[in-house]
Every structure is written in structure tokens, then in C-alpha cells.
Image (cartoon, rainbow, N blue to C red; front, side, top):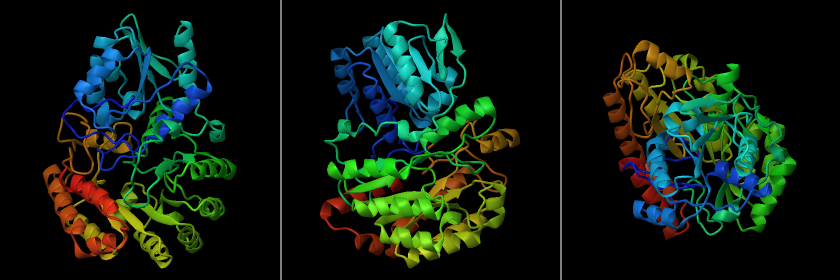
Length: 474
């Protein structure tokens, strides 16, 4: 279930997990969990999304008054915790004996905050194997103390069960239960083709950027793995055969565009070649996220010939000292090379720039980074402000050095808010710089003319214009 927003904010984006919604996308992670539950035949399953259909608190109350479900599952991220807790309180007012299962990075880290009573169970980290065992136990009235990977309450005290090893064989998972969203239309302004969905081919990332909050599932996995082992989890991959079967199914169902949610989609030339061949085979337009040091000329050529409509590159800064401090593992030279190769083969590039990721940041370094990003004349540039997410090394540094402008971490929308006062630049200055650069970039002649050429219909333009309005002004 995706509850309605009850805290007065815009809806949280629950797949990426660190922003509020600009344009809606399927949450492939909770749909995969639904697929697992369906495969286990654990009773009747439904999927309610009050955000997609713009339902109100009154709609939610009417639903609760009429519904008789025994268990409700919610995928929660940091930005949705307060709203979700209000939704749970409301739910339990109508269904006092119902169980609520929370998944995602929010409850995986903020266990005490989310376990407000003994009718809530938290599935920490990766959910699929855990939730099957948990639902069997709840159905059969068995005790919960032997189920790995959960936190719950017994006699008013929190019980944190042991660590559940992460799934290594991703091919063993069912495809996401997209039949629950078959009547919905999602739109990605970077692809601009109807019949859009999301997918993943791998989980996790081996790199050690100090600030990094990857996709919400990956972050949940990292929080849990670091808690018990002190290390990031290893990467899991799907085979090309598994991806081929899913793309064949999507093609048959009428999907025409896919956004891959992998933290890093491009690992080497051979795997990239296989993925590109699959996307060409089913005439899919698609996009992905990648590191600049993974972009070789042969890979850029493969992408350009296979219908790749965008590559999101996390460049963060054009200052080598800052890149080294945050342990990004790249250089500015690699940034320029990657962009050169992608532009050569006409692959649209989106640059992600992160403001304030290091105490070395100054107005001058920011001005240089922002000017460089604009000069490159790529397809899009996304400016965000770093957030010190608990569970990251950057959070520890901010706490130790007194860089937080609040007593402790407060969930922020990285697209517009800051809670950091760094040695050489304040939160107010970062917010001002972000807003000014968004306005100057997204309203620039280059951006407008580049984007207008890509629209094939008025509806595409209207979708993109709405997303841009939200991006700039909320």
C-alpha cells in the first residue's frame, strides 16, 4: 500500500528514496515483493496506491472503513516516515487487530521511531525472503523470534532478530507484479515514449562515495549489511537470459520504454553488449545510470545503436580535490571523456551535480562546477544538495564536525533543501545557489530548444512542463 500524504508535503519518491515526486514511476521493489507473495499463495493480495490516484485523507478513511485486510505492507523511505506513521495510526483506529509490515530504508534504520506499537513488524534490508517467512508465521500463529531480518515488539520492548543473508541469485525472484499497474500510464520525460516502466538487472554498488544514498532498496540492504558485518553488501546480478525473458514479456504486454533502476547499469563491455542486444531485439527505448569511468568508446557506440535515450552520470563536482575527498573514484578528465564518447554516438547525457558534498566546497568551487556543467551542453543537468543520510560516512563527519544546522538529521528534499553549514558555505547559501542555477539552466535557450526538438506530441510537452514546474517551484 502507498498511503496518501498526510504531513502536508509533496509525496516522497519511494524508489530513489531521497527526493519528493517530480514525475511518478512504478516502485519496482514493492512490486517484486508482491510477486513473491503471490507465488507463495499466501492469500488474496491487493495493491492500493493513494498517491498515484491523488486520493485524499477522506478517501483513505473511507477505504479503511470498508476494508477487511489482516495485513498491510508499506514501503517507507526517510521522507515518508512522518506521513506513513500518521497513516498507520489512522489505519489502526479502524483495524486495531491488523498487522502492519514496514519495509525500505526508513524503518531499516529508524527502528525505534517506526516501532510505535506491537502490531507493527519491520522487515529490515532486503525484503523478499524475509517477508515470505514472516507471512507464513503470522498466518499460522507461530512465534516471530526465529525469523531473521525483522524487528518487532514483545511486552513493550523492541526485539531485533538476527541478520538475514542477502539474496545472491536474483534470477530466483519473480518478475515484478506489473498486472497491478497495468491500467496506469507512467511517463519519463527523459524517454518521451508511452508505455513506460522500470526494471533492474543488478543490486548494489561496490564503490565507497562517502555521501551516497543509492536506490531505496540498495540503501536498505546497505544499512542492514553494515549493521551486522561493517561492510557494504556484494553485488548481485541477473543473467542476460533472465533479463531477456522479462523484456520479451514486457514487449508482449505493450511496453515500449524501460528505465533501469540499477545503481550502476554498466559494468563491462561484454555485459553491456548483451543488454544492448536485448533492448534492440524488442525495440525498447531505455535509459540507465552509470559511472563516468565505465564509459568507453565501444560502450558508448553500443548504447547509441540500441535505443538508449539517456545515461545518468553522477559527476557531483568538477573539482578533483573534492572528488578525491568524497572518494568518488573518478577524475574530471574521466568526466570529460565519458561525455565526449556519449555525445559522439548521440546518447543523451544527464549530469548529476551534488552541491556541498565536501567541507572543501566554497562558492568558488561551486561556481566552477556549475559553469563547467553548463558549458558541456549536455541534454540535462540535475543540481541537488547533499543530505547527510544516517548510515553514511558523511553523516558521521557532519555530526563529529558540527556541520549540521539542526540538532540531528532531518529528512530533506535534496532538490531544494539543506541542513548543512559547511566551513566555507552555509545552508542558506547552498539553497540560494541551487535555486538560481536551476532557473538559469532550465530556462536557458539551450535547454528549451534541445528539449523542444524531442517532443512528438502536445501531451509529452505537457507532462514535461508539469515536471519542470514541480522541479523549480515545488
